[in-house]
Amino acid sequence: MKKVSYGDILKATNWLSPVNKISSSHTSSIYIGRFEFDTDLVAIKVFHLDELGLLNSFLMECAVLRNTRHRNLMKAVTLCSTVSMDNDEFKAIVFDFMPNGSLDMWVHPKLHKKSSKRCLSLDQRIRIAMDVASALDYMHNQLTPPLIHCDLKPANVLLDYDMTGRVGDFGSATFLCSDLASSEGFVSVGGTIGYIPPEYGMGYKISTGYDVYSFGVLLLEMLTGMRPTDDMFTDGMSLHRLVSSAYPNGLGEVLDPYMCQEGHHKGSTIAIQKYVMPFVEVALICSLELRKGRPGMRDVCAKLFAINEALHKP
Image (tube, rainbow, N blue to C red; front, top):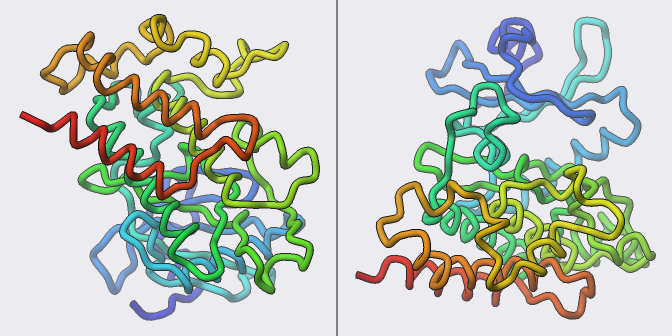
């Protein structure tokens, strides 16, 4: 697709209409739109450049999109780098539209007005977990230098037409041991409270273990339907500790009750024993407080693949 102008962006989004806005954060707003010269719907990410440091987020995201290619990563269609009608700097990236929204909408449907009836089966949760793990394995083990996402969470996993998971939003990402990171290995990352590993607050260098921890929390969230920042998690209690204390015999008390009821013909009791327990084990080991105890994403992929294989055996 050709590069697009500021005018093209305005026309595609009905002049950045609130009606077209599908999500917003302190870093950007995302609009659904369609260009006059193309029939496909697109998602247009407009960066809030009035926020300090967000130009760097735009540049980082462009660097990631330019240097990566994987079926489980979001793919950019084109971008727009220009000035607005007010002569302000304007930056936007155009992506394929993901019709099934974010994983957050499916894990926490009641918190999204248009998603209240959405529900993921155990099968779908395992498949999406595999998709995200595959993306992280590619980033950590197949890219040189390795790429660390630094803000993995359900809101940054998008779902396409067939519910395939795609990791997006690389504004906080960093390449290890590159000119995009400091020579010391310390980088200033955004991250989201609840998904940031404990060692980062103690001054440790960024490593692949950062994403592994965030992935573990994401899995726990998928398993329980609880956010790591829910009000109940105070005074030393965390999502990891809640699930760990319930494992193995009390899992039924903390699991999302809809998980084993939708679309799984083998029954919830058998499902918990044979498939959910290994799934929980992966989530718990990935979200360990001690970085040295966490596995690499290659091993995580192998474990999730084995769970999926067992689930689909006749």
